[in-house]
Length: 308
Length: 268
Image 1 (tube, rainbow over the protein chains, first blue to last red):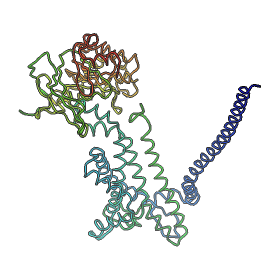
Image 2 (cartoon, helix red, strand yellow):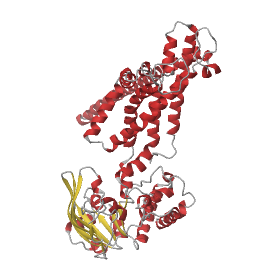
Image 3 (tube, each protein chain N blue to C red):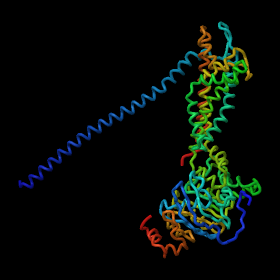
Image 4 (cartoon, chains in turn purple, orange):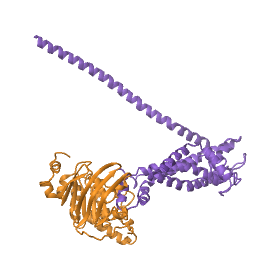
């Protein structure tokens, strides 16, 4: 073989072995990556299951303990002393309904209007301040809102009332709804606003007739989610609505509510009251579930914001 | 001078519908339209062409006072619509926009309204005296949809969702919506940019049909489109109006070398 041919042969051999080296190392890397991918995907599945586990356990537990006490009496009868059969939580169910009504009537319009303001006047100094304060309020422990309502609506009048309870919950609803409303309105594309402006709509008419209407399903969802959230709040009701063993639908009197009734029964020493508390908790979680389902139903895709 | 919500017209120059004079448009401190002056004759289709970012859309938006809706944007100069400066202090922007319609690049039907309500959307904000009755509204809607060449396709589903229409149909719906208030000028901002070729052709035919009744100003990045449908063409570059003239002259014997360079495809 000539020197040139020898050189070429050496170079080819070197290239071949270099290529083999690369191929082997690539195969190893690829295998390692495939394993890593499976591990990561598996971990995310595991995390999702762990995340839903508390809910599943709670519902299972509640069904186990509370289903037996659920009967027609539960929904129609007043609380009975321990030992007496046939007691119920009718007053608490109606009471929760009433407090949620007060909280919604006061909190939702104010919250939605604030959200609209925040979305429309995005950069204004007042808007920035309101947004910040809303976020702070959202993070406030709910018992503080109860104390605030107590100071304003219970102490001057010298008695507890459903109204005070409703107002405490309204104060919780407002910042929650304001933020979700703002987010939903900001999702409406600028092009839609411009289309309305180009037709001769004024700025506020654009906001109300076009933007708000388009964002409405999302806003309603936000409102329902907020109501579901406050339905279970106990701390603000402890010294505002306080609870009532008797039937009452007056907003100016103390009123029973599911969370407070459950609390009172649960800390009592009576077993039959404990079973009633489980049943009450089951009803409460059922209420939250129904509201959440309603929220999902509202945003099903019919009109509203559709994809391009 | 009182401030009416509409611009009551007393035509001083009946053949010149729109005249821009020394128009400057700013986004904050940045001047994107520089000292533009040109005029638009009634019944003409005027095309504004130029490379991306030259300010043609901004110029168009100055003509119906839409530019100022962007925060931080402002306009200096004059735009005379049928003799009156639309930027005069006494003139309301809302009134201007009711007389000068606009169609945007991407179709924007209102998703919560039916087809009929979409077309009638502009009628709802007319002042009480000019607003048509319910029956008249149906007639206006039908007339507008016919002029937009959409009537045959939607006459059986006027109460259906507007967003169920195809892209081309939605854009014609937006044109019908703009036509419903019978404006004398319509501004089209790259109306066929997001449409397929068949829909594009339909819209171009539409422009040709409409020009008898409405003055049209169309911004397009498609030179061939400008050559096909316009009577006059304006070429813009970096915010300045380089040349404006009859379309056939512009495309065959442009006066400015930059116009020639753009038209022959040397840049843009």
